[in-house]
Length: 419
Ligand code: FIX
Ligand code: ZN
Image (cartoon, rainbow, N blue to C red; front, side, top):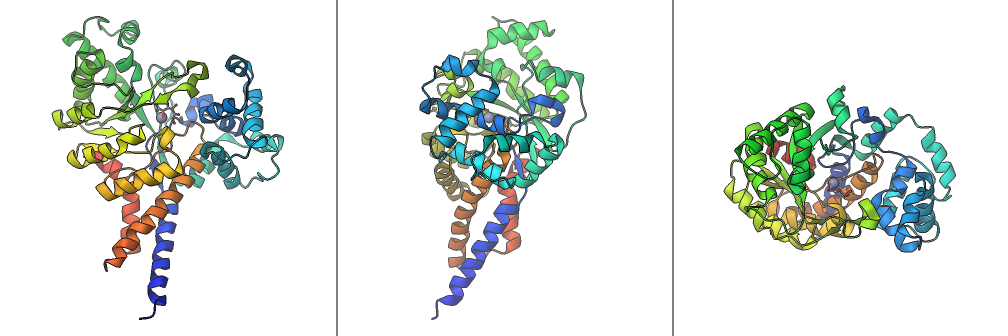
């Protein structure tokens, strides 16, 4: 038989899949962006892109300046140092560097001239609100979930004052200090009028913590609660972390029907002199997550794990527990080779019942490259998967592919949340 017809239909299928993956709007379920009403907390523009902590870590490997001298520089000078170290003196081939260029190119800017002052002039002339819309449109992002901490001194007053919400920005209640630094946080809660005991984790304390969580869940309209955890996190147990989880967080999540997002595997402050850029990663014993999923079937858990070596076990846990929804290639995993490996494995083990990616954008403009790069990888691997189906005689229709991609890009998450 002649080969050409089957090649043609394979090419057509590939084009359809690519087109759908590149254009389906996504719900970006974990970012560090803010509703524009937060003013300067919503970071954007070329200098912010350059002083992203990923790029600071990379540039201080190339630049022998003592850390303290780097931190003493103004933001403008830091951006210039990063530009010089990573874009001028070397080719910007790391993922975080390439991301800056992908973003600038999407704005129609000429990166070939390597002209930082010209780039700065372009951003200086931008209208912030129009820029928000353009970034989200270029990224194909229909909604972003923020990371909202009542313990953040800059963020809290904005919520307390109140503001008109931008519907594109949803909220997630981030509670790391509550679970990871209980004695200090208890003191803070007492100052805010909650009758908690720093030493004694008793019924009164748990119910006051729940009162605090209820107030903030309602104030910010939280879509879920979230915490990042060190690799050696244990559950159940006598630690304040485990006790608060069991007796305050989980009952609260059940009462409000909210998922609890766990992000294990981060070692904070591996090199504190690098500040935000100084966190590292480690292998987690996922027994704690298994205990949660098995012991609390009426709770819903979202999880992403920082170590590459934990990914297979995490996917298997998700096969066992339908109250677990796994998401994203977090932080050091958000590079094309690992997105490809992890997402391919998840598709093969879980089909379409997970959320392959979130951006973790800290700077608005980053949604452009983070999604462009991830969509490219996801498109390539889905082309393979649908081609494998087609070879069995099961020809996916464009409507079916569209339905599937919408699941991966937020639909499955939204159904899990609503369930
Ligand atoms: O804990 C987190 O949510 C992390 O994503 C961040 O804290 C981290 O600094 C980051 O930006 C990773 O992408
Ligand atoms: Zn994050």
